Image (cartoon, rainbow, N blue to C red; front, side, top):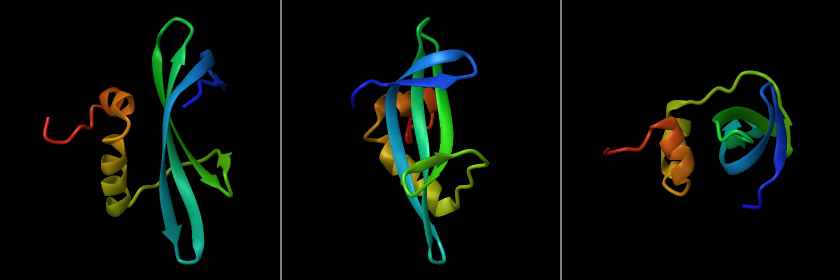
Length: 91
């Protein structure tokens, strides 16, 4: 993934890694996004957001049990995020 800058309350940060958990409620389709960010001073931040139509939205992120399972599976492909969240299975 190409590194891009994003704004945070702690100043600009680089997007290091990102994963998307696709979700559906009835006919509505949306996704939760988990991002690993790094500040210029090397501090790592994890941001959770949700998106509709590819546009990030503010507000709470809600995950069902099956969405957590998807998140765990996707973390296997995103080791830096898994390490930051300390959610690796079997560890």
